[in-house]
Image (tube, rainbow, N blue to C red):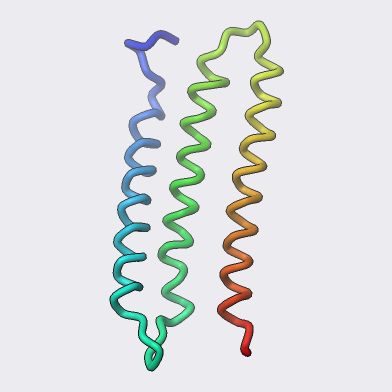
Length: 110
């Protein structure tokens, strides 16, 4: 795959990534303005940045796949796939860990 002929999924993945990033940033700014000690933000509203961050991570992983695996030549393709799977699992593991820690910190009462 040459530089002048990008993969057909590249543009939709970029749109998803930057749209999700915009939603994530706007929701975090909104939470910062809405949350006070008297009226905390409902935990259900945290689904908005959660889904947005998942969109950012999945589209980033998809773009990483297109760049490292789909565009690679057949020689060494197995090694590229293995490295990609390890990186993708690591990224998703960090995402799951951070979401779980955030949820647990919100549901734990002092």
